[in-house]
Length: 121
Image 1 (tube, rainbow, N blue to C red):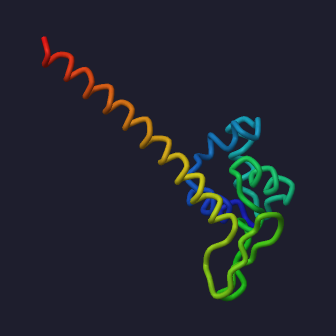
Image 2: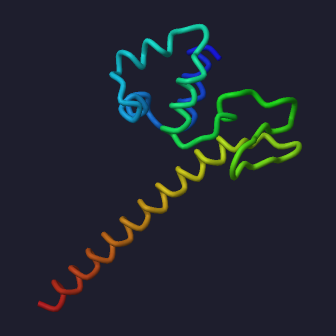
């Protein structure tokens, strides 16, 4: 996989490159250097996969219309375009959005309570 291909994949996962560099404990400059190569080392791909919570199959092309997924808790689907890596990224986004909704609901409840108190004065 080339650095350019990796950049494309990473941009689709919703985690910024600076955040990935931070999670890998790399400087932004070092991470950027690793993105301009013709062949990204598999060790780096493994570290990135762990950092963004995806399976290694996230980085590799699908074979025909079949998703390629393997390993613990993998999702195997025939005639599908969803890989385990895609599924993990989507689940991470869902979890983040659910947390955001909960925070907004709590804030809204607090504001409504404040309005009720002010209306009673």
